[in-house]
Length: 114
Image (cartoon, rainbow, N blue to C red; front, side):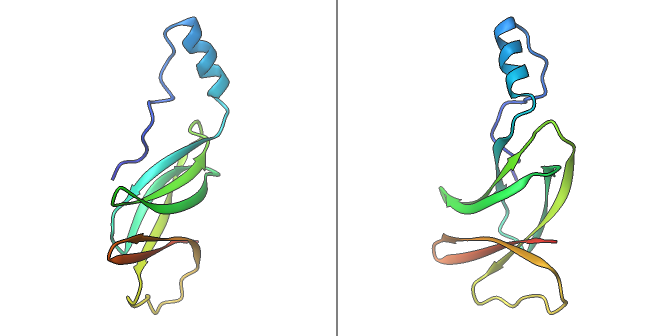
């Protein structure tokens, strides 16, 4: 599972131009993409206060996008994927709906356990 597709933002700048760009983006939010495995439950490391935005099919992969501040400590977030027609765990679990994605011929419904 790929965490996100970005260069490392925590690296030390090596030139004055990079220093300006680094300091400008140091405290800014950024959108990261996470590739999800098609499995019932998985855990993602998302920076503190990160906001999950959406899920979608991108080139046959189930992906999740989150708005994050990459300079904050990451926490584990539990993601649950349920296919249309599949049973849902009978144990009462709090879930927040993130979205639905179609990857033919399947339809996946993605939730975050809260």
